Image 1 (spheres, helix red, strand yellow):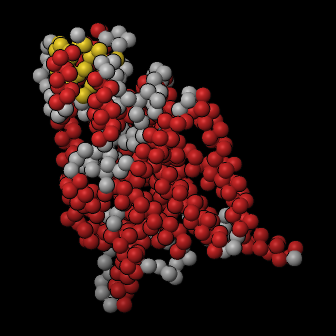
Image 2 (tube, one colour; image 1 turned 135 degrees about the vertical axis):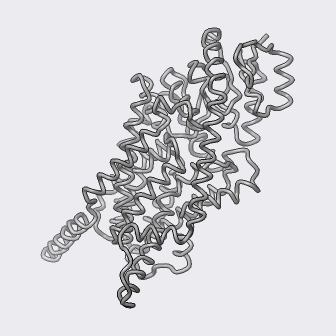
Image 3 (cartoon, helix red, strand yellow; image 1 turned 30 degrees about the horizontal axis):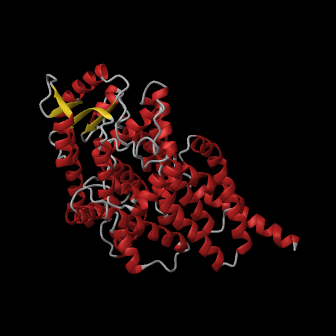
Length: 512
């Protein structure tokens, strides 16, 4: 009996060493990832130079973090859908004097994401040419879909990929049960950065449970559950202490976890327009057709069939959510990015290997090989639509920059005026950007920092009711945005317009 256990331990140890050696990331590829991570982080809106170009969500998140550093809490004082740790890190950067610290944090998260994405794709394809190309695509799509960074999912991504890498090894039988402490640890951190990763953790937990039942590992499964709980407690015990003391548990669960899972419309655009648009974005980004190929052909012979089905279910769940957002922005695709690229990488790897085999058997002059050949195959499949998503991304960027250059001068003027006249009073900014709040360090008169945050009819009514209570002494209105007739009447009745030189597209109202 002892001899059998000893042999099993030796076999397990040798398999672990073999996998570690095979999946080691080459130094040159690490160097490339350092460069890509540096470029992405330096283009972040956390850079003081780029902060003025932040979109609605990015500027709102910066504002919530800034106000958290001043004692105004997310979830209870303002509506927030990011994780507590996410806003706490932004608040910490303000306490340290500059958001430049967030650039360093983003550099680390981008680099770690690239490392584990590399490991996962190589594990699935066993081809470094394919991995090198798709690692570049991973960074390129982070730039295109998540331009400016500072999205919660980008900070949570390395922890999601670490968990996915861990499960790949577990389903291969090369992970000890005690290692599930790591799974619980990274899972809790990811949830505290981006609660919407809950969908991934739910599916992966169910996959572990089904796998253990099928393998009749009931005792092991219970032990793994205890390890997950222990790993989770290591994080939640510390963070939960602050959440509990600040009395944020109930609003945190309601706004950051339940709301995103029950209210899919994150924007106000027409569904008939956003549905095909988001579907086109997913297709043109190369995040769909690899999944379709997997569902058509399958890989029953694969030793990774469990993890492939796990990725497929996660892909499907996030894809449905993206198609229902009712928004024209690109950053929703970040949630599905690694899962969609994993399937596409497998598909391209098969095509690449087939092309090499055909070259050999037909005795033709060999075409070029390597990552450039992989890129040719990838672009050859959907070159036109790939360029289309880039054009659309540039269109959104140029529209945002144009709007910024047009209005930021007025926003700065209004922020200066309000900062000098408001005192401790509340204000409200009816705008697409939180720049006026940020520049003036002003407290909002509603739990919804910007009108875009009140996406559904219920929240729009709450916002309207809060403004009708006249807690906001000043209200700044971007005339380019529509406002309800009720609020228009209330402004004319209970507020008087303030004359501020240099403002054309904004109107500022003061409570009578």
